[in-house]
Amino acid sequence: MRDFVAAIHPGRFGPWKETTVGELADDLLTYGVHDRDLPDHQGVIRAGDVRDGRVMANRPDGVATAITRKTRAVLKEGDLVVVLVRRVGDAALVTRQHAGWIATRSVGIVRAKDPRTTPWLRIWFRTPFAQSWIGRHVSAHVEPTLSLDALKKMQVWVPPREQIDKLCELVALIEAKTDLNRQIAAGAVAVADACHASWARHRASWTSCTFGTVARAVTGKSSPGASPEDSETDITWVAPADVLGTTMPYVGHAEHQGPAEPSAVCEPGTLLVASRPDGARTAITLVPAAPRRGVLAVRPADPEDRWWLLHELRSRSDEIPGIAQGRSAREITGRAFARLGVAWPGPDVRRQFHTVAEPLHARARAALDENRTLAELLDVLLRGVSSSTRRS
Image (cartoon, rainbow, N blue to C red; front, side):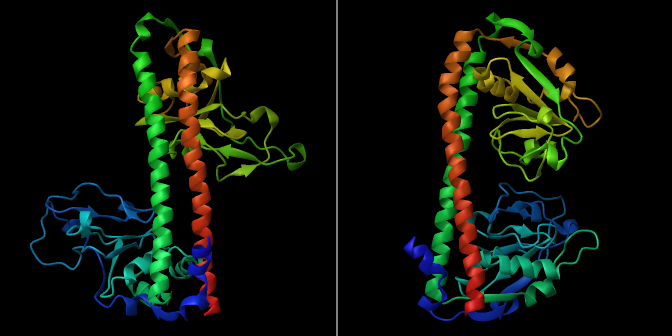
């Protein structure tokens, strides 16, 4: 913690220098090529591939028109790629894996002679100071866009080299631990999925019934809210996007909260199901929550069956949209779900699975809880960087 505090203290390493992105990008500052010019023989990085400070593209992707001319949009290791459309300001360093790939027009490319410059800019773009600057300079005729000219003029404060190294080291440690926790959580859930699949090989000998005999399902309401005087505390409102957008099968405090009718609130341990044409997602509530329209709340008859039911529904994610209403396959009624058939194991199997799955999910949740703490720590660091600019 002492190193953490020292890293963001402006007086220990010396004064910070005020400059611009254009001055720092002393080797190259440009953006990528139009989609019509994409090659068929090189990897392509689009704005959607730059997320959470990383380039997420894993394979070459392009159209059939090869580039025969030289282009400045070919990326080099150490370049900073910056999203210029929609999620403006998201930035990532180009690693050896993506060197030689092509960036599209929605991505800015920053290249500097000093190897410390782009790692620092990657941190700087995430600070409240930089985010506020971006918010004031984007144009939004159709969607938020930052022009290359505006990017060149973006104000940047640069600490001394030793302090840059310390800040980059701290951010790298936080990100590495966060990635490890994500892998731990995903691995724990994958093991539970595999255990369920192993037991489910014997489903031919189990009782055939419907979900309605082993669980109770109700659909969410268009507006689960109540007047403030009817509810003492705000409740998490869960929309379909909150379930479909989860990478792990848990729903905690969602973005939207407000008062809710007691009858609309689901207790922790309720399964929430949301559907779309390419499959359904199921997540378990960690806090009291009120499902909105398009979300099905499923309560097992026996609370200890929640883990078996969760993994049963996860294993049938491709099947569930078949019972949904509408062309978008997003409306699942409690009645349709109750009629869906299921092979239900005996109590001994369900009890054994609960014994295995409970600690696995506890480990996954512990890793994700630690990531929330790490995110708060990173936020403190970034706010400290912003405040350091005012003290320099």
